[in-house]
Amino acid sequence: QLQLVESGGGLVQPGGSLRLSCAASGLTLDYYGVGWFRQAPGKGHEAVSCINYSDGSTYYSDSIKGRFTISRDRAKNTVYLEMSGLKPEDTAVYYCTARALFITTISTMCHMDYSRDMDYWGNGTLVTVSS
Image 1 (spheres, rainbow, N blue to C red):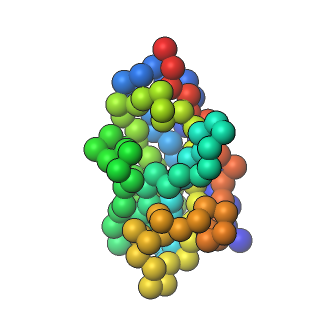
Image 2 (cartoon, rainbow, N blue to C red):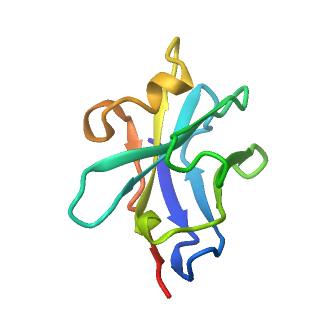
């Protein structure tokens, strides 16, 4: 079993930056895609960014493209989401997920259903962007 633990959320002013971490244990993330999804108050889950852990290919949603960067540290079995230029509309609980990829592309993974199509989920970390 794969366990995912997110950290790094908090309160930040508009225009500020945060780095979220998703630490994996139990299994190596090789052969998995790792995705960051978020859920704003009163809304459904939205894919933010996904990364193919093996080859490092990435996908970004249009809402955060150019502001967020996803990366991984293979030695630490950890995936990061660097967020800059934060806006109040980025306020949400951010969840880390993992899905075995096989022939699935990372773009396809980021268009899949959060609840139905992922294999593993973290418990989430809250990001609040407010002055």
